[in-house]
Length: 395
Image (cartoon, helix red, strand yellow):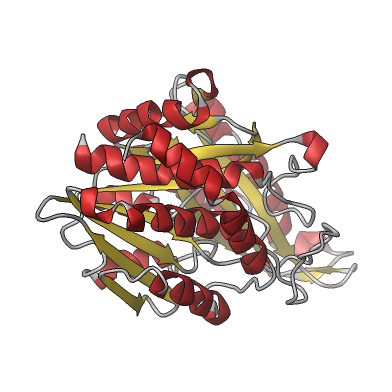
């Protein structure tokens, strides 16, 4: 097998990969509820007669294709869950589950990996090593229920794996572009909640209260100074307040106000500094307004940091699939991705496959009710994954 053979096989399977995507798009399911999705993946993989296939991480699937004797092990991951979004694309294969939608491209990720599995199955005898396919549940889940964490904790799923790769269809990139970079690719995803407690009372008698809403308003403004005054200007971070809750009546000053937000960065130390900053500001601003403050800070996802060697291997391999001028080094994004858990354990890399095309209506942002993908990129994605497996094991 060489690059030309992979391209020929990808072209031959274009209709199959597209059909996978459309079938999976019809049955979107939330994290750890992907029973129909799991059944579809199992059926398609079993038809390829892998050396091993099993259910794991509740609703996930793992398959292994062993090559000709001993060698290294390379893994690929596709996320399989959908979002609680009501679809408004109007496409003929729209969601059959009201209120749920594949609004982030995971249907395409599954289709690409199933296509790559078919190519690798046919080349199995030529592979000097093994390929492990991980269909992971619950990538979209918040807090501490991410599917990647469950896969890592499973132990057996990653045991013996020498490298791991992942790819995300990406509407901000033009169709046909493969985005790569060494080092930080996506940010950590921290969440935080501050509860300010004071003394409520009548809205007409504020002098008799310790108003937590005023403290909360001051805190929202003060938090913006983390980036502008606390952080090295040559580094990046985001500190945003997304929710403010306080009171329930127009003439009552409440006893409690609550703020919730997110913090994003590419370095663990910045995350720690941000937590300390929020705590200091909350406690001192609260005290200034005679309120107490309580902080709950959670590190949900670590940053996604690509191994330099694996990133360059993928970029070089991608030039044979996408074309040399379409493989581009991209800046990191403040979005989070639980593929980061794998990269903490194993050398690997995560890539963006551009699928944004205004003429095809595929330039809507991720998680939007009209989000869709440029299906012409599915075959390239499948070929890219198969080619990365070949390059890692055989070159």
